[in-house]
Length: 299
Image (cartoon, rainbow, N blue to C red; front, side, top):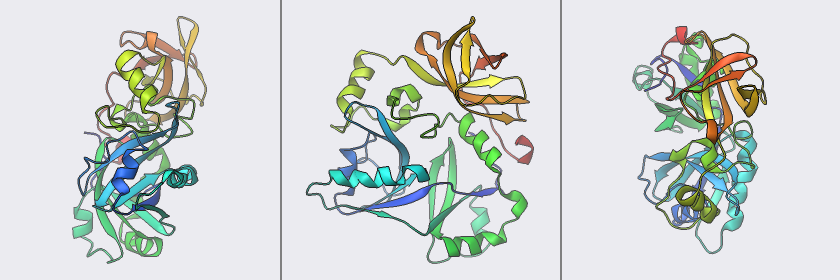
């Protein structure tokens, strides 16, 4: 499993929304692609929010804190869009609240808490899946969190470049970069954010039709490029001299002494034996997510 070193930490890049009320899960279940009714307290899952045409409006993580309270973790740019989901409330007992002052810290190990004293009473500890790793997170008022993390060595804080490696090598898309309103959920290849056994939700008819009767024309794919130059967003992906897709995200990884990148390619070329070209360099499609990135030497 991909993870970071047990002594490392970083500040969570997301905003938090609280969805509260006895109908919170029922309401979310009828507007999102994930099965919110089967979540147990202390569990979470990724989900898509789609429009009636099955296109992706947002992508985020749900966490069931308690029976009548769901936390949503999202990109800051998606905050207003996700809050607007409340416009679909009819008679349900549910409300959306932005956690204005909350800040999260992601830790590599529970020992970081046990070794450094008791958490402030205002903070909450959760376990969640982040970039294909099981992470320990602490959320609370920013003043308390900022004071608490002062006990952690600054040199153990992961850089933005390191976080980009963790995200890309786990094939986790970022909304507005790797997935937009032009995409169907299945095009992202992030199928664990979909549930095909639940009841109706917004966009379900189109999404189910693609799953059971058809296919998408392109898929988000992880590439490995043995070169130091990082291709820009939108760089063409070529096969036998013809453009078959475009890069969406890329970063350099010293682990492979090259570049890892996400990009959409035409489904017809989604084969493991194909060698592509990105920025005039050979690019190999990764069949599985790239292995462990533990320790500072991996960055």
